[in-house]
Length: 471
Image (cartoon, rainbow, N blue to C red; front, top):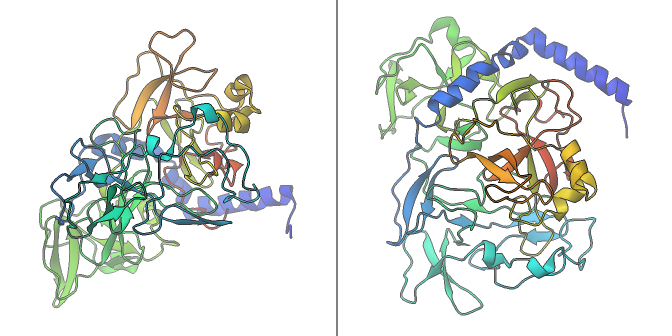
C-alpha cells in the first residue's frame, strides 16, 4: 500500500530534516571537515591488537589498514573464507568443510537470485575465469595436521585444503602486496546480494564484554550488545587512567562501561575504581562510556555532543586530500572537491561460484548495461569517473590513482591514448552521478538491482546512522 504521494513523501522528509536541525544533529554534520582532518591524522597511527592463537607454521598474522589483523600465507596474501549466505532460491557459499570452488568454467546462471531463472548463458564465456582462477585454494600438504581451529578439508579433486573454523580457505588474485584485502570485506551485508568472500584472522584483543564492528571509517569499538562506545576528549591519554572528568550531571546521558569483578588489565585495556566497588573500563588511556540517548546499534549519535567521540581500534586509511565530506539528510557522505557525492560500484554474478564483477579486470557487461544500456558514452555521462588531478598521487594502497580505458572500463596501460586518470578505492574506480546537481545530493544512491547490491552503485557513506531503519 502507498501511504502518501511522492510530494507528500518529500514534505515528510523536509519535516524530518527540520527536526534534525532543531535537535542539533545537523550542526554536528556541518563539522564534516573536522572528521576529514581526523582521518588524515589518525589513519596510520593506530593498529588493532589481536590475541595469539595456535597457527600452522606456514601462516602468520598480517596487519591490514582496512580489515585489521588477518591470517596470511608465506607470501603475505590474505586468507579468505566463503561462508554460506541465504538467497531467495537457495544458498550460495560453502558449507563447513565442503569446498565448492573448483577449476570448472561455469557457463549458465544458477537461478539463486529471483526473478532470474537458472540456465541463462553467462557473458563472455570464451574469456570467463573459473572460480579457482580468481580464488586459489590454500592447499595443505599430505602430512599437514590440524592445529587449534585449523583443520584440513578434502577436495573432490583429491587435494587437501586448509580450513579455519571449518571454512575452507582461499587467497585472492586481487591481492598483490602484503596487507592487501581487495578480495573481500568483513563489513556486514544482507538482502539478496551474493555471498561475499570474507577475510579471516585472529580475534581482537579485547575483554569479552566488547566487540569490534567494521565500518567505512574504521574498526569501531562496541559492547557485545552492539552499543557504541565513546570517550571524553578532556580525559587524559595516559597509559592507565585513574580518574575521569565525567561526573555529576555528565552522568545523566553518559553511562560508564563497568568492568566486572573478575576483570584483569590486559594490553591496552585497564580500569579504575570510580567509587568503592565500581570499576570502569579504560582503553588506550581513555575511560569508556555508552550514550544513553543512542537510538540504534553501533551508533555515532553520541559523537554529535561536543567533546565526545566514538572509539576505534584503528581508523580507515586517509582518503585523497582533494575530497570533501558533505552533510546530507541521511548522514555524512564522501564527496569530490566540488562537493558532489562519490559512489562505489558493486556487482556479483548469479552463478554457482558467485564470482564478483565489480573490478576492472572483470567483465564490464553488467556495469555497462546498468549505467548506460551498454553504451560507454552514456555511462560516462550518467556515471562519470571521479577524476584525479594531474598533480595528485595515491595517498595509500586503499586509495590509488589508476588509468582506465573509458571505452572498455578496464585498466589502461601507461601512455595509452585516451586513458583517464581516476581515483580507485580497493582497486576499483569510484564514480559521480550526473543527476546530482548540488553538494550533498545523493540522488544516485541504491541505483541498480536490489538497491545496488547485485549490480549497481551506492553512495560512499562515512556515516549513515541517522536514517538507519527509516529510509
